[in-house]
Length: 130
Image (cartoon, rainbow, N blue to C red; front, side, top):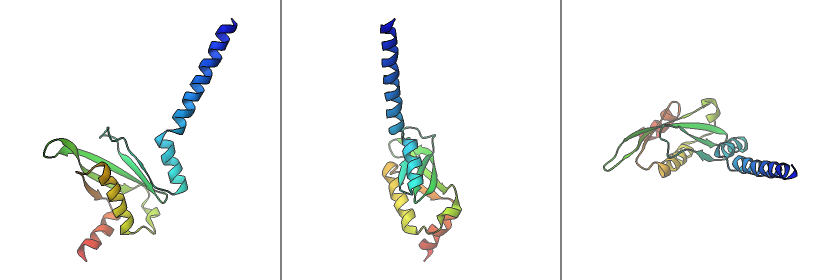
C-alpha cells in the first residue's frame, strides 16, 4: 500500500512540474505579459495558415489574417491583412512604427504583400502621395 502512495505522489510531482513548464513556456502567456508591459511580441503559429497572428507593440494589439496563394515554386502566404483591435489606442504611433511591424512580418512571410486596414491604411497611403 505504501508503494502505491509513493507512486501516486511521484506521479503528481512529475505532473505538476510538467504543468509548470508548460505555463512558463506558453507563448500566449508571454504575449499577454508583453501587452501588460507594453513591449513588442510576435505571437504566431507559422505552420498553421488558418490561424491569425497577433503582434503587440506599446500595449496595442494588432491582428493579422494570412491568405495562402501560389508563388513561382510553392504554396506560400501571399497576402496579409493587419488591423489594430482597438484603433483608439493608436495615438502616438508613427509611420516608422508601422514600417517596423511590416519588417517583422516580412521576416516570417517574405512573399506576402501586407495590407493595412483603416485607419492605418490612410496614414500609410498619405506618405506615398507626398
